[in-house]
Length: 101
Image (spheres, rainbow, N blue to C red):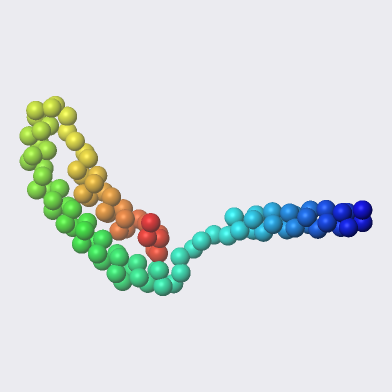
C-alpha cells in the first residue's frame, strides 16, 4: 500500500512538471537569429526588390488588356496589381527583418 501511494505521488508530480514546462514553452517568442536577419538583408531583400520592379513592369504592360476587359465586362480588375505589385512590395518593405515566411 505504501508503494502504491508513493507511485501515485510520483505520477502526480511528473504530471505537474510536464504541464509547467509546456506553459513555459508556449511563452517563448521565436525571434529570428542574426544569421537569418543578415541573409534576409543581403540576399532576400535585393532579390525581392528586383521582383517588385519586374512585377511593376509586367503590371504596366498588362494595363491595356485589363482596360479592354474592363470595357467588355464593365468592371476594372485589381487582381493583377495586387499580385504583381502590392504583394512583392509588402514582402520587400513591410515584413520584419529575418522573417522569411
